[in-house]
Structure formats: C-alpha cells, structure tokens
Figure (tube, rainbow, N blue to C red):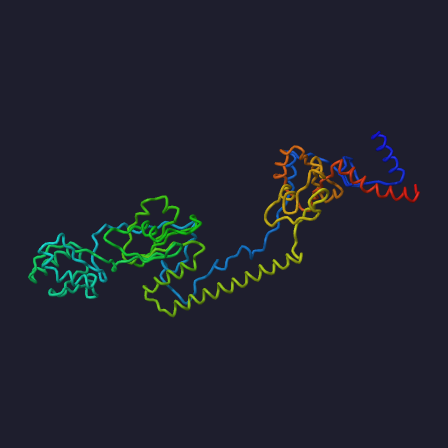
Length: 453
C-alpha cells in the first residue's frame, strides 16, 4: 500500500511538472563543454595533485624588519672595540673565556667592618672589655679611606691589603705594645670593599660582595635569581673585566661545569645578553664606558642618535604595517582563494594564508567550515580543479574523497589546496528526497485546491 502511494505521488509530481534539481558531480566525459575527470583521492593521487606548482603569497617586508636591525655606530663616538663593537648574534657568538686566576686569601679592603672575637670569657676579655665595648657600640671597626681602623687607647692600625692572618699579627703586636696581652681572632663582619655587578636577563639584577669564600659565576647568577631568558640558544653571558670583554654562550655555560665555576674578581661586571635585550645591554655597558674616560657629552650624543634612528625606523615600519592592514581590510591586497559549496557549514570563499600551504582538512575543519553527515554525503566530497594548461581551458579534474571510511580523512590533511579550487560536498540521497517532497507538497496542494493539472 505504501509503495503504491509513493508511486502515485511520484507520478502526480511528474505530471504536474514539479521537479527538484540539486548540484552533483557527474561521471560523464563532458558536461557543458567541460571535460570532467573524476579521480579518487588516494595516497598516490594526492602526490600527483600536490605536484601542481604553487607559491603562497608573501607578506610585506615590513613585517620582517626590526627597528634595531642594521644600526650603524654613531660617527661621534670612537670607543674601544671591546666595548662598542657590534655584538655578534648570540646563536653564533664566539666563546671567549677569561684567563684562569689563582685562588688567594681574602684581603681586607676599605669599607670592610672588622670585629675582635675572643675564644672564651677569660681575663683576656676583661682586658679587652674597653675595646669590645667600643666595637659593639660602633658595630665593629670600619676600614676607612686611609686603609686603617681606629682602636681606642691604641690608635690607627693599617689593615687594608692584609689577609686576616696578617691583620691578626699586626693587631696583636699593636695591642701588646699598648700594654694588653690579648687572645683573639679577627673576623670580617661586613664585606664592603670588593663587589661584582650582575644585570641583563637576570631575575634580580644585583651588586654582590666578594667574601672570604670565592664567588663563582654560577653562584652569582643563582643568588641573583637565575637567568630569565626564554631562548637559551640566543643568550650570551658577557663578562667585563679590567677593560676586556669575555663571553660564554648560555648553552655552553649550562653544559660545561668549568664555566659555572669561573672565579669572579673585584670589579667584574656580568651581563646576560639576548637578542631581545640589546637596548638594556647598551645601557649597561655604557656605565662601564665611564671607566675609559670618554667625555660624557660624546656618549650622550651617541645615545641620542641611536634613539632617534630607532624611533624613525619604528615609525616607518608601523606605518607600512598599518597601511597593509587597511588595504587587506578593504580587499585591495591580492589574495588566493578557494571556494566551499554544497552541504557545508557556510558556502563562501576562503582566503589562503600567506607564506604557507593549506590542506583540504584546513578548509573543511577551519573556522565556519565542516559538514554534517546527516545532510552531506561523506562519499561525495570533491575538490574541483581546473587544468593548469592554459590551452586546456575546459579541462576539469574532480578529486573525490570518500570519507565514509574515517581513515581516509588522514588524506585530507595531506591534500594541498591550490588557488581557485572548488570544494563541493553532495547531499545525502535521503536529504535530496526530503527536500523534493518538502518543496513539492505545497505546490501539489495548491494545484489540487484550484483544480489545475
């Protein structure tokens, strides 16, 4: 009975001239003058399709430029090569290690604070009670700029440049001469005479004292919070010592314990330099330039010239990029497109990206793409591509992806798009039938109501 009703409905629709036509890709040799060739998408046909020549469009050069690239050294400054020479890019920095230094006992310097320490509460402490009280009140004895400390009832004693052992001997002799028979040792309460500085890509730029224990490069970096660079291969640790500039790439520093144990000396300046911190590196070493006795005015002029040049370049690059963005928004930039039609999320054209090739999967599953298997026929996903031969204008290849087997979707990630490709997804047979019925029934009802055949 149902079959009879369907046949009667179809006969009635045909008699009324009602028809539903949906787009499809035919297997015929020619259609409307176009030579159509349907090829299943396989691993082999994907390689064949990808051989079609295509060079993605390039972005403007302004998006590749850096305001600091290619800066020339100002003519007003002629500093030593070790300070002002353009630093080599960190990825090809040449290893230059400072010469090894012998470990020496700590020598007291100007600014250090000394304390007398007694081993026990004995008559010696009683004899030194006045001295101890004096040093406690003053928080120890500070080595002053004449290299001496002042001891009550003893006088000034030269201690700068002496080791602790040598200082103890000198102080013992002076105290005995003053009528004391002390038993004590000398300790450094505050180390203020010898320092190193750390800056650049460091968590906490610091000024660290050199104490009795030797200070290594690795320890100094760790005390300062470690290196913050996110690109170790582009980072260089530079050491400025007594007018010489040394450098160790960060990758080699981490892989070689001997570099981590490099002994720092008084006056060393350490700067962790990256390609992104050139301005900070310049400011840091400009402070060291003062040691070379160059005139301050020349340095300021050089900095001003660099800042002016960088500002002009930044403005020029920003204007070029902004102009490109405006032209792109207005559609005044040449682009390559592919087109989506049939049972897709939205029928539209899709711009191919700059400087890279998109795949069929990128287009199908990109923003606004995709298809629903309820309406779209996964067996009939086509990429329609014209012939690359200008003499074969009517040639057309329809690459067919059968996605009813989900494993074939992997081929979509390898099938490259070319400009003017047309991606078409046919409808399901049941979808075609439902649409034909939904469109035909209202027309049939009107004809029946008016008596028209």
